[in-house]
Length: 119
Image 1 (cartoon, rainbow, N blue to C red):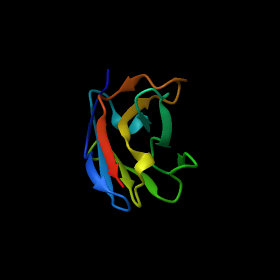
Image 2: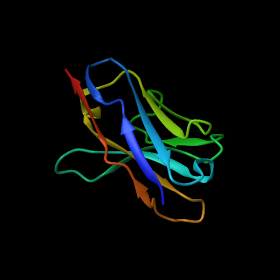
Image 3: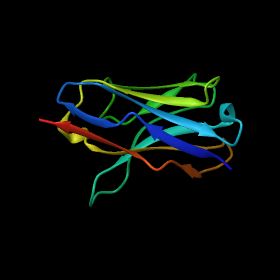
Image 4: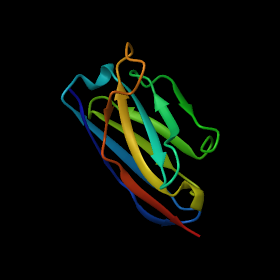
């Protein structure tokens, strides 16, 4: 079992930055692939970014490419999402999720953290 806890959300002006953290416990974190997702009321959950277990490769949604950076520190069991040049359309609840390399779907989810970007 894996427990995930997000932090770092808040209110920021357009063009500002935030860094989200996803702290994991309960299983060897370095074996997990971790992703960030976001959701706004009335919309489906949207993929944001993901990083493989070693941290050597990552992927991004087109909407955040060039502005967001996902990284991880396996010694601290934490994955980060650095968000720069934030836009009002980035406003959402951001959640991290984890899965093993053999799992097709993300099996473990955090509770989410609110990010609000004011115009």
